[in-house]
Image (cartoon, rainbow, N blue to C red):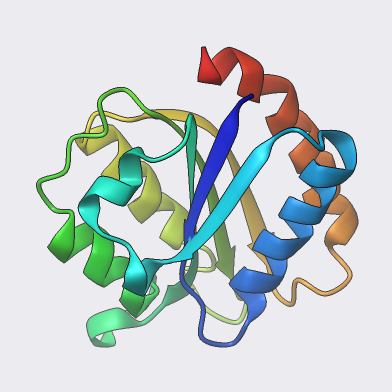
Length: 156
């Protein structure tokens, strides 16, 4: 049985909403898939290696006063606590959220991609949600099907 470990950060609830919509869509199509989610603030560097596939999800924030950064709690995990982590070719899926009112709309994706590639992971797929996630459940469900089709291959 394949497993997916999700590490995400949220303040407004938008990222958690997308993660929960994804989990619902995955469970509807693959009841045997083991899915576990974890807040970034509770995650340790070794948690990045849990499961067959890792999914990182973060909104785009102005961490450190600069627009276009990771959510502060994801930043603390990836740029501080896990800065020396080795992902050991782990397949990783990524979700980034953003708001088109800002110049760097969903730049968290760039930071997630850089982390995975710099730390020896393999980017399997990614999803960007712009603006309110409510009403974008179909987009998440379609991406879930796409991701689900890859998970058996990624897990082997």
